[in-house]
Length: 509
Image (cartoon, rainbow, N blue to C red):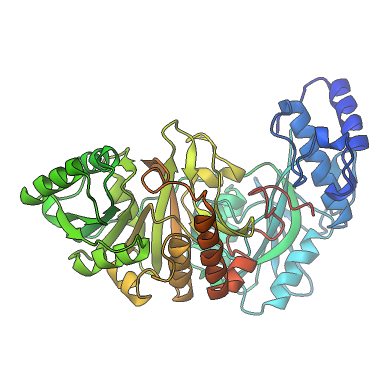
């Protein structure tokens, strides 16, 4: 969080913000509206130092009023030094006398008051758990409250592998797999972040338990490198399904961008599902490509139904891996298919999407969170392609509840296991419900961080602006929520402490 170096200016700014910003984000005044949006989040137009001060004040209010954690002059109250703790080169090891669990923290982290008890309590409440971890408060160079890392209810193996989940402060059951190796690594000089990556690799995700409360104050996390999953040899046949209607100015560039795809030509097919095109140029171009064997052309003249069109394409496809792709996308990277397939072909994986960019380079999609603004929303929209986002989540491969079907890879086995896309959701939410169906069937969905495609969002179909389209959208949203009410009530990969109005902002009301 950027701060003015001059301490007098910083203290003056903090004093002004403390008088104007309401406690807990409630009871806004005309003056506070200069700093806060209706949702309670800081206004985007504020200069960076003022943004930082407002965010810090809101976080301090949340810690004191909601979490009951004292904060003095911007510093969070921490536990006293642990009696009998072993100090390693880069970590500290203590043992809980009641449970025998090891409590581990990085040397540059501190246990928030009561943090150790919260973690050991979480282990005691979950007898099968091997590791307990909690949320973290990020501190600036002066040790003052500067940000938060509020983690999702469900442990994500991808974030574990990149060291973003198990760092700062963790509790490890005395009989947890790899305990001896963990201690040896810490005593040998490894950081807790790096040591936990290797230990957690042998621990099933269902033996990791999340304590949904701040337990540590530490520096903002940084991801560790993660290896790319191996692809099988030989590579499977891939079928790319592209529904379209007219709009050759979009479809033409889309198909042209796929010609450079780094995948064997004899193991990749492109199926264009033509939904009633009547434009002479489009019909002529599609006919020529089909005659040349470059695409397989299917015709469906019924009313637009995105789910039905893709299901028809899947039935006609010969591939073991399906890629659903919008006609208004263009590939940016010849290796796009290898990147998606490396995840999609792993056991237990359902839908795999990627970061999509608007033509100007801003993020259009980096995963979907459920429960945002009453439905489901793309997250990190508007960031630049290389912006790491909230605690680097926009810059790493991670598990998500849903990805958009504008670019979605899934094995045929997983697609068929849930019956494809639900055709009673003709336009909206069919991709979200498809991903939710996959989760209900035991699969995990993934969004890769690489910006693989540009997406000219909804240009060929148009926006939902007229009343009939808005009514249809509301009806399909209600249907989606009725099908998966638990996921819409609490997205398992989005913290309950985060806003449902502004993604990854602190929940203030």
